[in-house]
Length: 187
Image (cartoon, rainbow, N blue to C red; front, side, top):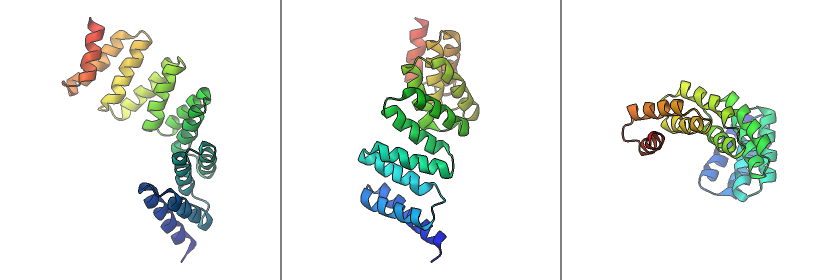
């Protein structure tokens, strides 16, 4: 078999075993994929996922960094950022999530992690443009619009927050969370 075919088969087997929760087998096939063609980031991302599931964050970060070195992506940045966040380095995690969103504004892991960190670090104003950018791409994503409304309210833009909630309710009149927040603002 060709090296590329070996790579593809081993990578796919790694993904299958990971999906089934067979971490040892997944690791074995991801490592075979790396050795048959070490120029793709996917097996490293798989190995990082295996390491995360085993609780080995140090190894997971190493694998995410290897994947990122081969081909920088929002996935590898988000992985590194999640580990940085877990290890208490919230400022670096925030910066990495911003960078990941810059590469892919639709990266929901990065976006929702950024919302969490924005609140924790009192940097809510910095995340609002990222939420607005996402909504330009997918204006029907009520969860993002709801988060934007909450962030706007936190920075004192109550009228803008109400507008966002009303937009949600125009499309989804039964949205309980939007109704509840709107009622709080109006009371």
